[in-house]
Image (cartoon, rainbow, N blue to C red; front, top):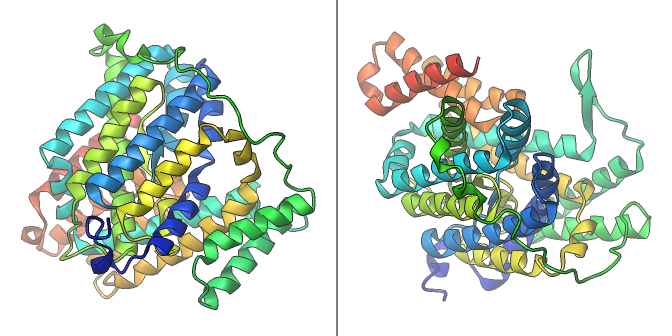
Length: 431
């Protein structure tokens, strides 16, 4: 087992990998609660979506661990499930069964691109400065999400965002959990992020801010209402509306996963010579999970950026993913226990992980203005647009422009020019 997962080469131990797996699972377990709620607004059966979401996470994460040997959890993408429900089904009036067909087709295209190693080649041609910008930008984005989930920052009509009410009990719990976790990290406590969530949850239950679970074991809902619905409308694949949907799923899913993979590999110290080992296998695991999910009855999957919480806790190999998969399996039967893992106790972990990831910004060459501009735009636009893919796209458009302005166009890989042109067309289309 240790040899298969390369424990010696990556400095891993069973204890650290298990703790990392638990930490990542707790950080991303919210998807099992939120995804059924979001997709139910599209008319899908909430129970069936819960089971489809869980089984997809089990199989996708297991594939990631066994095939690619990465400590990454895979589950339905939060951004794409919202796009599915509010833009496609409600906004465009497309039935959820037909929209699932779009998810399936885009997932199959993902698999083909992965098998042909096109996705891997694109990722490996991204300049190192932009890779570090992507990793750090995701860090700022993740921290922003954590601050929002904790209630530390809130919406404001005049200034867009402002400081939340720091005296609200849930916010106080989040701040307490954040401080406890930060102190343990500074003092070098192994598994500080995981222990912080445990202490925060226990404190929340003791103070009545978190409800105790009504039961421990729950029944597994049937998949029948959603299983196979993606095959019902294959004859509508070539309609203009569905083609637009397929393209959007393909675009956002591609670069969300690419960004996560770059960020995680960089954070874990696994990137070598500006290339990500086993990137092709990781991308194949992710795209295969999307195929499985669309057939079962859920939306496009993604490699969860919350996996960085597990990496911060010491995860370095696919054994962490095996642990995550096992915990998702248990959650099928112990779903009531998930109710105690609330945003107030997971948000502080996400904020701290964002800070750790943002430290990658130090590797960007800030002495070269042609690098500074695309790198800065990539970083700042991720939290401001609430989209990893948008930040990456804007950076990719600017990088060839600034390099060409200094007559360094030959230093830019041709693929970067192609991607820049594609992103320009994409922004023109969505506008």
